[in-house]
Image 1 (cartoon, one colour):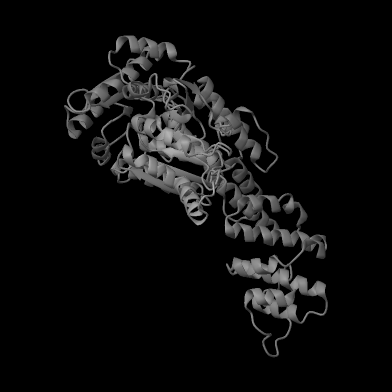
Image 2 (tube, rainbow, N blue to C red):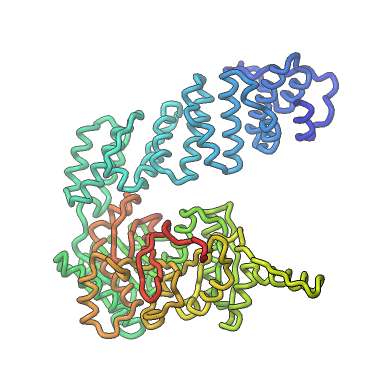
Amino acid sequence: MCIAVLSLLGCGSTPEQQTPAPVIQAEPSSVQAAPTAEELIAAAETAATPATMRTYLLQAAAAYLDQDQPQHAGAILVELEAEQFGAHEQSLLRLQRARFYAALGDWAQVVSLLQDLDQRFTQREQRVQVLELNYQAAVAQQQHLRAADQLLLLQPYLETSQTALIWQHMRQVPADVWRSNPRSVHPNGPGWYSLLNRLTTAIDDQQSIEDVLSQWQRAFPQHPAQPIVQQLLDTPYFANPPQQVAVLLPLTGPLMKQGNAVRYGVLAALAEQGQQDVHFIDTNTYSDEDILAELEALNIELVIGPLQRERVDSLASHSVRPWLQLALNHPPQATKPAGSSYFALDIAAETQAAAKAMKDKGYQGILLLGPDNNRGRQLSRLFTRYWQVQQPTGHIRTGFYNSSADMRSLVSDRLKVAHSEARKERLEQAFPGTDIEMQFRNRQDIDAIYLLGDATQARLLKPYIDVNQSAFGKRIPVYANSMVNEQTQTQGESDLSGISFADAPWLLPQHAKQPLHQQLSSLLRGWSLSEQRLTAMGYDSMRLAPLLARMQQLQGYSYQGLSGQLRIDEQTLVRELTWAMFDGDHIRLEPLNNVDTRPRN
């Protein structure tokens, strides 16, 4: 075994007159340097027994991991078998393997290897390693409650306080977890769990935040989260929502139709909640200086808007802003001002949301098909960039078309059908007179197809995608963004049948606010689907007014709006859209995990 390990490591022959290195002790003497991995390898070569050799090799693997050389550690660990060790060294072997997989980023393996491992160690260093690895795995897997729990267990071993980091994780835990009233057995855990449960309940039931936090302070007077609770009480508009609201929209001139579509939604929300202190300001009429002066004169506490990207950027450059803000576009290029959040309702945001949804479904390979123009390539880059971060083991293939004439050959090439047909032609040429029958199979490296174009382009592409899929294999599902859902292009059409797409839930069947949609449809002539999405945005913006400061602090809290399920992450309003599918000439709700991939036959 040692020879095999040396060969894998490329260590060469044993150094001359090399004496065996001592075994690493649990608590080494302060004057005795720990042996290097190379010294432990040398000791393994001259070990008196196989058991001693394996012990040295296991220690060498640990040393290589300490030296950030996981490839050398892996070469050793692959040669070691758990059955050859006693109970304690089996636990050490599992720990080193977990460290190795952590270096590779294979967090599922890390979690599996660490199962109950901390209970098997009595030495401080090893228990800390297990807890730290469990924490790193939880962070990598975005499991914030588990990450916080690991920090609670780690805290007694650490000199510095982890309170701020625990809070960062606790506030990102989905609110549904706190609604289920979970219990914690970790040190200080009950206080943390109680805090988040009380806050979630108070926001849900519109209770007094001040009263709820004061009750928590009395119940847990020595808890390390006391400073955080006081900070929440001191946060502007967290305990007492803003009352004076200004809405900045283009109500004349360029983008007037879009601005008024948002205004209709704001007014619809006001009609329901009865808030009167709302002031509309036309961003096409007033300069930044005039708007800022008006906001100060009106003692505005919350600003909704602007809608135009350039006005978002220009207003963000002014330092005087004693108000909350929900801007209706992407964040500025410069630093995002404190207290500001950004609500973008565009195809770029939808594309990123679609990438996340497909990642959550477990897809690895995605084929992107889009128009060969700036917009198509921009969306392709956005999807690819997000995919590479969120699904590092996955891959993206792309195809772009200039016109409908390109589509047939493009789809055939990207699905490798053209290669199968060329192979058949070569065989027929090699064996003239022979009738060769071939049944092509779908590509195994493509799990889904995502269309970046509009309804017209999707309607032209879909038949080519269908005809280039095998009738005998698993169908490759086809997805698209909300651009495929346009009444003037899709009503009564069946060519889109089978395409799944994401859109604002208000525009899909069975939504609870259908009466409001019908009422506005009867009042607003020519109210397009694009304008309806903006109206949903305006409605949600107004309904978020009392929640904004709270959702900025509790990032796991979400609001079920007309435009999607909304939450705030790093000052950006994240939309979780509803998925639907074209079924013949109508639309039906189709959760992403229910997409049909059965063979066509």
